[in-house]
Amino acid sequence: MTSVERQESFSGPLPHPGILKMYEDIIPGSADRLMSMAENNQRLQADVINREQRHNNRYYFIGLCFAFILALIGICGSIVLFYNGKTKEGTAVLGGTLSTIIGSFIYGNKRNNKKENKQ
Image 1 (tube, rainbow, N blue to C red):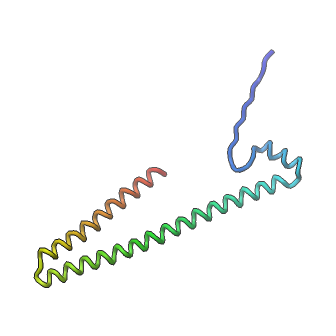
Image 2 (tube, rainbow, N blue to C red):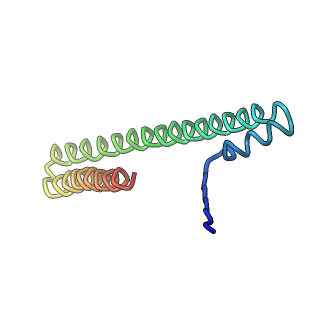
């Protein structure tokens, strides 16, 4: 006597098609309701992701604006110091400002590359 063993696996937001058919046989219209629930769930997840991306983009832009303003203040401050004959102080302020800008740029690029590699 031979025996045959069959194993199936299924994953996803909806039940296995065979089970979905059984639902439909027992309660007419239930398959359509389950499909609608899955579609609504996908739509809600997409909305959450879109909102999160807009939120992140907004904060990134605000941070960029503040960084630009601070860099401008540092550069203008060093120019004022140079103009008043304080070259050491002007060089220190300009060097600090530029090193901060360059460091932030390098750190931001490394961080973005790590995020892209994970996805």
